[in-house]
Length: 195
Ligand code: IMP
Ligand code: MG
Image (cartoon, rainbow, N blue to C red; front, top):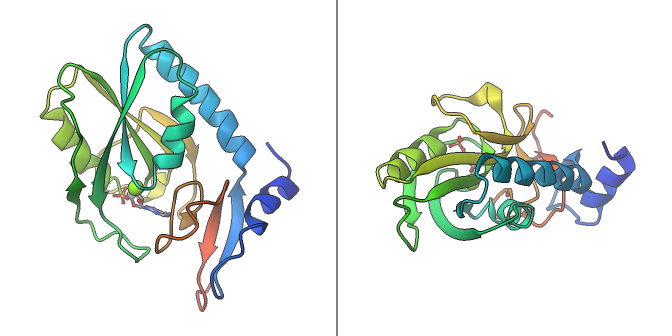
C-alpha cells in the first residue's frame, strides 16, 4: 500500500469544485500495481489468443488504456456507450445504448472493461446485448466493485478493488463530468451532505 501522503498528493493537486470535497481512497500507485497483476491474469487465462477489450465510455477509458498495456500479445479495442446516471449520484436503473461497437464480436474473446460495478444493471444489460452476438468468450474486468449495492445477478471475472458504498470519483469516474482526470480514486462529498 502507498502511504497516506502519496494518496493525498494525488488528489490535492486538483482543486475540487465549489464546496465539494474529495477524500483519497485508492492511490494511483496502488491502481497501477493492481492493473499489472490483472493484465497478467487475463493473458494467463487466454494464452496465445487475440483479445478484444470493449471499453464502456467514458468512465473506463483510463482503466482500459492502462490495462491494455499490461496484457502481452495481440490486443485490440472497441468502445460502447451506455447511459445510466446522468448528473445524479443515484442509479436510475434505466440503461440506454448510446454508441454501439464499430465491428462484430462473433467468435472473438471479448473482455468488457468497466470502471465500476454498482447495482450491476448496466453490466447486466451490456452482457445480454453482447452475448446475443455470439462471442467465443465473454469476460468482465472492473476496476472497482461496490458489492453491497448489487441488485442484478452479475459479477465480474476480474476485480481491482472491492469498495464500500460511497460515491467515488477519479481515474475515469466522474461527478457531472468532472474529476475524471484525478490519478487516484477518492470519495466525493457534496456541499450540505451529512458526510
Ligand atoms: P450500475 O449500473 O449501477 O452498476 O452502475 C454502473 C455505472 O454507474 C458505472 O459504469 C458508473 O458510470 C456509474 N457509477 C456507479 N457508481 C459510481 C460512483 O461511485 N461514482 C461514479 N460513477 C458511478
Ligand atoms: Mg461507466
